Image (cartoon, rainbow, N blue to C red):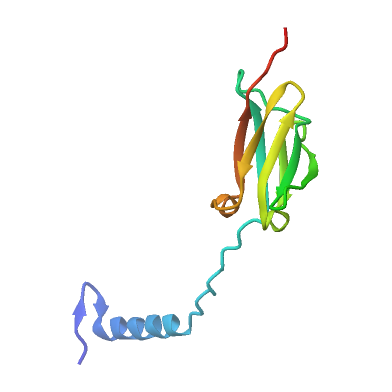
Length: 128
């Protein structure tokens, strides 16, 4: 005996449900992706005067024993990226520019290395 509702028989509904459940049972779930943080910290350097980016700003690392190790200079857009592995165990990052005061980013004791980028604005100095 078959019951029909709006032209669809109950047998067709049962067959559809069985096929649907079987298809779901054989569906492979995509493996969970692990989120891998970027391996570099990019420092965006700008000026406090007019928000101008600062190319050729020197970036250096201060170690726990007080040594200063130059890392490089910012590019034309005022950006310098340093591998986070190089920053492990460091105390500070120093950022200096010819006509600006130097700025420092504290590394030790902060969560700075959890981020992929950071910003620093250096104040202009003038000699008269």
